[in-house]
Each structure stands twice: as C-alpha cells, then as structure tokens.
Image 1 (spheres, rainbow, N blue to C red):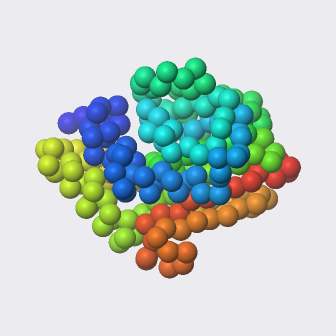
Image 2 (cartoon, helix red, strand yellow; image 1 turned 135 degrees about the vertical axis):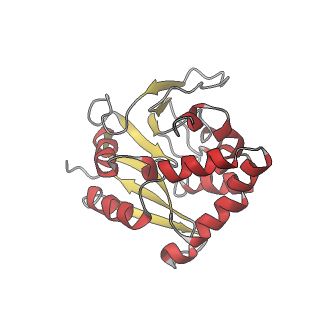
Length: 223
C-alpha cells in the first residue's frame, strides 16, 4: 500500500479535492482567503505555502510582481505563461527565506496537515514584512458541517472514480490537527498582530455550524 503522501503527488488529489475543482464549492473555498482584499491592492512579493500546482491563482484579487508557489513536495506549475509565477520546494517548518521577505503570505488547506503547526505559523510570520498580510484558510475539522461537505463532494467524487479508499486513508493520516487546537495556536502566534477572522457560511456558531474560517492578519512592527 502506498504512503499517504503519494496521494498528493498523483493526479488523484486534483481529481477529487474541493480546492482543486472549479465548481461552486471550490470557488467558495478559494474566495474566502481573498476576503478583505480588493483589485486596487498591490502586494509586490507573495509567498503561497502548500500551493500544490497553483489552484488558488485564478482567484487572486490583487496585483503582484512575483508569486512564489511553495510546497514540501515537487509539483508541476503548469502552463501559466507568466514569468511572475515561480515554484520553490520548501518546508513550512523551516522556510529558507530571509526575515520580512514577502508582502503577503497565503496558505490554503495546510495547517491541519502540519507536524508542528505553531512552528510553521511562526515561520510564515517571520518571512512576512511588518505591515504585510498573512491570509490563511482553516477548515473547521472535525465539524459536522465540514465533514458533510467533504463527503458530498470529494469523497463522493472519489467513489465514482474508484479512489474512495485512497482518499479516506489519506484524509485520516494527513488531517492530523483539529480546529480547536489550531485556533489556539493561531491566536498565540498572531497575538501581537491585527487579526480578523471570517467564518462561512455564518458569522457565528463556531465549529458546529460553520465549515471553515479564514484568517486575515496584518503583521505588526513587533518581532
């Protein structure tokens, strides 16, 4: 039986994952970390953590000079035909970039996969410049609303493609961090910063009624 990390290097993940699809659910997921950002904004240097093959790029609202896609494993960046977009293999727990290197740091579905989320969040904050922003998507997992959505979309699609066992196994092994723990770690790492959180579909209700939250963090001048 293959290691669960193979799921992310194969085309199986792109075939079934909500965040990799162009449907309504995928659009909602990706649009969440663009909340609070407009087409009038410009972030010169952007780093995306856990970017896979760049599925989030079509949803970006602002202008930029360079967008660095990064992931722990190699992924093809596809035919972007855009010299501003580059890929670097990076470990979120030990980013190779200098302090304050980026104007924006973004992460889609990453935190629940990490071995040491607090360390990775600290690294993301370190490479973001003072006054820059960090935008992070955090699924409310485990939570009945999020689990229902996953089973009605990704798992259902995997079943039709004969990939259900692989999808369930990978999710069980890779989604190792639960929402309450991650929320505490987010609050601890960003306690000196200006933080706004958005929940979907409701602005209240926590993990019982919402599927996910997005964090919009303006990094303070303090280290």
